[in-house]
Amino acid sequence: MSDEMLNEGDAPFPRPFPANRIASGAVDTEVSANDDEKKALAELWSVDTVHSVSADLHISVWRREGLRIRGTATAKITQSCVVTLELIETDVVEEIDATFLPENSRQFRRMLNEDGELVVDPDGPDEPEVFSGHTIDLGAVVAESIALGIDPYPRKDGVALDPQMAGEGEEQNGDPKPQKESPFAVLKGLRNTENSDD
Image (cartoon, rainbow, N blue to C red; front, side, top):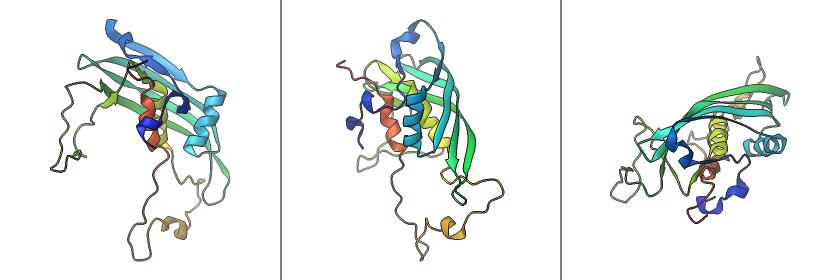
């Protein structure tokens, strides 16, 4: 799904934050999901139940025109054990440290190869994210962070993983199977809640 297809209505946990709010100084804020949003997040994350989602965030100016979001996101979820199918309650805690620049910023220094493709240094610092319009969706930032901390193959304590299940990500000749796109990939586009025409 492309970023153009995403809009505020697609966001399961929208928390638009006006970028100009920090012009006079840093802001501390807390976000949490309501019951309907928790149900939507459970579907997005492919878990049985989301009991709670919250984050304490510190938002400050970054490189004069950008924003830096730091804090801790927490969630309590219930998943099914991949071996026994028993329900497992899990606490997910993820640290957030993300930077954002307006889409028209001249501060982007992205390296491109001969084909014009973006070159990413896995050992280098994270590139800032782009935001358009006047807001950043804090809910999308929190949801994406928590998604990265969810175990895709949860197991009850003391239960061994079925060897057949452990190897199903590989073909018999040892070559990896093509991986399906992660359902969390769409979260990246949810950060932009308004466009400059709004």
